[in-house]
Image 1 (cartoon, rainbow, N blue to C red):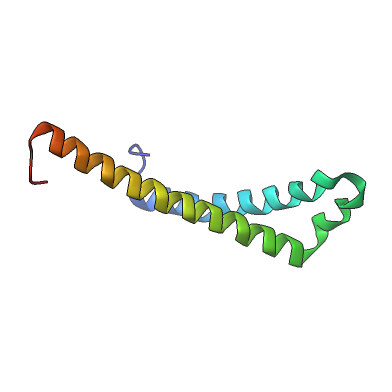
Image 2 (cartoon, rainbow, N blue to C red):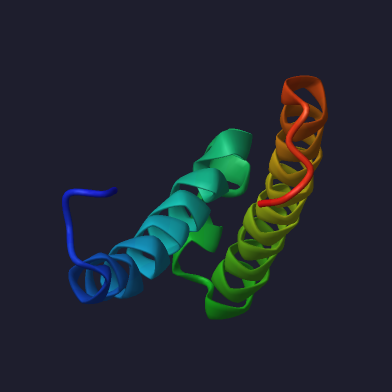
Length: 84
């Protein structure tokens, strides 16, 4: 998001991402149909699912960062550049 200043991006993310996690967790309660639909109001269920989704997002970001670092190193090696 190069078009937004850093402060605006983080302010946007601070409100958007938790709302997205909570909405996703609430919708996940309906996956089991009528048997699990009551969970959409359960705070412990929502907390556990939100934390699990957050953990998945963090792990995927770490993997992506490692992949980008390896790709950049390979690109530098292929171009013959040794410094950043």
